[in-house]
Each structure stands twice: as structure tokens, then as C-alpha cells.
Image (cartoon, rainbow, N blue to C red; front, top):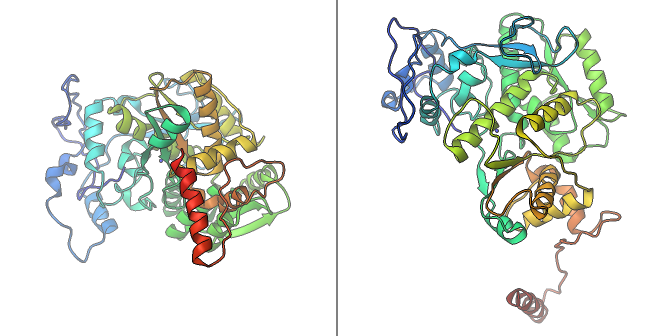
Amino acid sequence: MAASSLFQSSRFSVSPQPKPTFRNPRSNGHCSPIKACASPDLSTTPQALRHRRPADENIRQEARRHSSTHNHQGFSARYVPFNADPASTDESYSLDEIVYRSRSGGLLDVQHDMDALKRYDGDYWRSLFDSRVGKTTWPYGSGVWSKKEWVLPEIDSDDIISAFEGNSNLFWAERFGKQFLGMNDLWVKHCGNSHTGSFKDLGMTVLVSQVNRLRKMNRPVVGVGCASTGDTSAALSAYCASAGIPSIVFLPANRISLAQLVQPIANGAFVLSMDTDFDGCMQLIREVTAELPIYLANSLNSLRLEGQRKRLRLRFYSSLIGKYPIGIPRRGWSVLRLQMPIPSTSITNRTGLCLLLKNCNGIVEEATEEELMDAMAEADSTGMFICPHTGVALTALIKLRNSGVIGPTDRTVVVSTAHGLKFTQSKIDYHSKDIPDMACRFANPPVQVKAEFGSVMDVLKKYLLSKDSK
């Protein structure tokens, strides 16, 4: 998962009288202004951006200075049992507690004070978030922290660890949609165009920022650990390195690409390569974090999911629907993010996926390894450079399009979770036709030719004729 920032902090101040709702000048005016006693600080509006910070002050120092002059904004969030009734107060925890499970042993979720957020209408939030796009004021240049009020509203900007992640482009897959699917409104959300090359950055900036806050509060956190097959460890190690926090990574030996392995190593993580699979690594990290002051960074931790899901959802609304309702899309467009088979211990993924499918009237499709590799090759041939996981989503899209579930004019978004550069060996093997029991129908190997003019001309003429006949 919009660049953000403002030369003034976007903190909200409590004043005796409400300030007017900041309206989007492009709004059609159908929504009435919603006023509240605690209004967001309008010093973050474009009119307040005319000054420059002092030359000897960096952007974090500037945020710190503004932080000292503004009160907390009045929004809040807490941990509650997963899928709990929003009105229930039977069990909840502060985000400053180190807790991963409910009393019953179930997963936790981050629940926001929705009544406080609803005091301001969609036009207000759109105007506020849009006013932060493209800025470098800390921390709003991040696609996650530009929406800080909806992510971790109570964290101090000085505690945030960010690489200005997010803001990845929505790519109009014009040629792929037209040539292979007969579609005219197909989009690919390239989350791999982020700091460490995957959407995991969106959640890790939230988790590591909260860990940074906990350490400043002298909570018992020495380091942060995860089990990973690549992307999680890359994101964790990068953000921990930026914060100066030790990171510990459990990896299954010989089961991830070299491009993924080198990221945590280069970022200084303490990497343990284990003779087991992801499930084995996950079991061990859970046991270790229960005994040592190591904070668990896997998706069992709901802070990770909070950054990932909120960022993607709001960006879809902003870019494609043009509004910021508080909810989730149910009709009129489709989102595809179908992943590889989920490991048995990935309870969070399975539970979250089931809830998402139920809420959105979703559909499950499957893809063989050959189908996903062919889909990846087809997409790459139209100018993309996607990961195998996106090949799964594209395979599902092709099947749903062929069955008529998705129509030729349906606006459809495929979430591409990682950059293809993390999986170059799989692409090399495919185009070399070096994958056992796979036809590699769209392989494009280099042509061997003698280094002489006549031979080169013969090959080029044959190639150009083949293209001209299509």
C-alpha cells in the first residue's frame, strides 16, 4: 500500500469552538459539513504551507517542534478480539500492551473509535489526505502515515519509522486487458514499487513504529523477530535498521530466492537458516517470543495487518471511487488478490480471507504452477514485471473472465504484492524452458547468432516478417 506531508503537523487541537469543516473544492456539495468540538488542526491546509523550515532543522525536528505546540487529536484505537462487535467492551487492550491473543486464544484486531472519525465527512477526509500528497513533511510523505488518523492516531510523529512507503501506482493494464481478456478497465496495483519491494512495507512501518514507541516507554522489547519466506524479513530488517532496533529472522533453508535472502542480510538482521519449512519457523518464533523480550512481527500481530489493509483500502477509494466512506466496497468493481497455498499455521491469513470473502460476496479460484507462470509471462510481455503471486491473481482473473463472472467493462483491480525483481530466477528458468514438466508456452529465450552482418540481417528479417504478419 499517497505521498503526504504538510509543513505543519496534522495533529488536531481541542478548541472551545469548533472550526469549520475543511471542504474539497472539487466536491459536488451533496454532503453537509459535519462539525465537532475537537476539530482537526487546519494549520495543515495548503494555505499553511507557504513558509519553509529553518535550514538547520530536519523534517523530524520540524515535526517534533509542531508536536509540542498541538494537543493529541482525540482519536483512538485499541486491540479487541478479531471480528468482535464494535459496541462490545468486554475485552480490549491498549496498543501499548504487548499482547497477540485474546483471552480465548483467538486473534486480535485493531478497532478505531469510529464515532470520532465519523464527526468529519468523506469530503473532509479526502481534502485532508489529498493535501498531504507529494509533500516531504514528516511523516505525511508516507502513503500509510498520510492517513495517520485512521492508522495509529495516538502515536507521536517523532516515534514513527518510515521510508515514505506506499503511494505505489495504479497501473492501467491497457494492453494486457485488451489483448488477453477483452477488458478496457483493468488496473494493477503495483505494491512492489515500494521501499523493500513488497506490500509488507505498509504493515511493517506501523509495527516497527509502535515498537519504537514501546522501547521509549521502557517496555521489555530488545528486538523484533519474524518467520519468513522472504518479503516479511526484508521489510522487518529494513525498518528495524532504520530505527536502530535489532531484528531476528527465522528462514527455512534453501526455500527462498537469493534476492529475498540478501535483503535481511544486507540490512544487518540476525538471520537463522533452519532445516524446516515456514510452518516450522513459525512455530519456533512463537515459542521464542513467548520466552524472550522479542516482539513478534508476523501477521499474528494485528498491527502489521492494520497498515496493509487500511492503506490499500483507502487508496482504492481515493483513486477509483473518489470518496472516503468508512467501509469496504461491495459492488461495482472487483479486487483480486489470490495468493499461493497458505501454510497451515497462517491462521490470520485464513481467518481474514474468510471474513473478507463473506463481507464482499467473494469468490475463490485456484491456479496451477504452470498457469501462474504462463500468466506472469503474458503480463510481462505487455510491459509489466510481476511476481509469481500476481500470476496467481491474473490466472484467477482469466478464469473468472472466461466464465463471465467478470465482464468486459467491469472495473477490476489486481493487487500485485511484490516486485518481479525478487523472483528473477523463476523468470530465467521459465524463459530458458528449464522448469521440469512445464511447456513454458510463452518463453522468449535469446537467439544465438554469429557476429557477422549477413547472419544478423537474416535473423532480423525473419523476426520482422513474423511481426509484420500479425
